[in-house]
Length: 208
Image 1: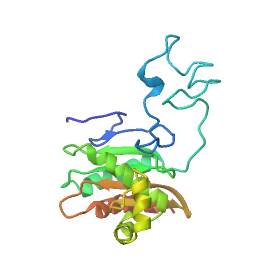
Image 2: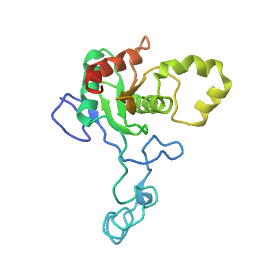
Image 3: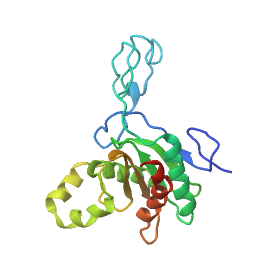
């Protein structure tokens, strides 16, 4: 099969992207720190060594993540995220969709692009999932509000990663937000939320 893997594990065909943990910068997607070291490796060696930017004792380099352990952010376990993604891909295989599962900060933990799907849908899926974590609701409930409330519409416009579209589904465990599912590309007919709920329903018993 013509699969596109970033992290290869023996599962159904998909593109799976792990994410660095950091805040969104400007127009970047949540978690994207930008190009590390301005794209050029330092003469003294790669970042990450002791005392070097990004390494133990070193500061985070421009456009790169800092060193040291990261604070734990609530997130769906990878196995659970993958289970939801595969359920969506199977249940909505008639659509060329992309989907994402993010942590409680809205940063991607899993991006899944089934074969024959357009990669661009994955970016929209991340944004929808991010939006679900910001507002802690199904993003479908934001559509009418954004269309009729100028102040809320301005809030959406102010953050390039917020999207008042259907397809973002928050995930809670014992009442605590742990992330969200985002789906884009289940067209025609606007079935993004319907497909996302297939994934949610596949794992909801494990979130209680």
